[in-house]
Length: 219
Image (cartoon, rainbow, N blue to C red; front, side, top):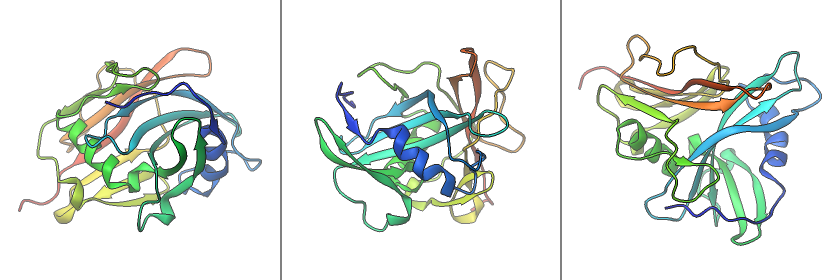
């Protein structure tokens, strides 16, 4: 179980993201840099208790229209070998000391727990309260989920694609869009998905698709 510490973090997560987001191919903000606010999110537990896993949702008011981003992050007590390209930044945590924050789609611990969530073997946790399930995060699975060790992450204009051999693909949506259904059906051809909620600029609750799993060719 992840423990949520009530302490200071310097720089803040939003400050780290404001510097990092414009370098992403899926960034949609204005030329002057992001204007970010927290809009929601959830956590997953690392079974080994070593890596913090957070799916942050942030709203950006810098462009001509507000944009909502999903930013999966991992927090580590030491650098992750071979993941320098995925480093968001470092910060000083008031309890845990120096932490290395990574784009979680490129971290094998987050990829493993996301696939466990889709498969129904992991439970989303509240973003701000220890040992509190987040019941607004819903996972549906109607097929085989690939081992996380086989997934390779690639960023593009539409988000992040985690691909496995034989074409199985887990697409993580980075720009979130509300859907009208409380529990949206699986997209055509998909075998799994994760949906969740966030706050809109006017304070309303929105629900949308966070990740979709598409099958590959038969073995």
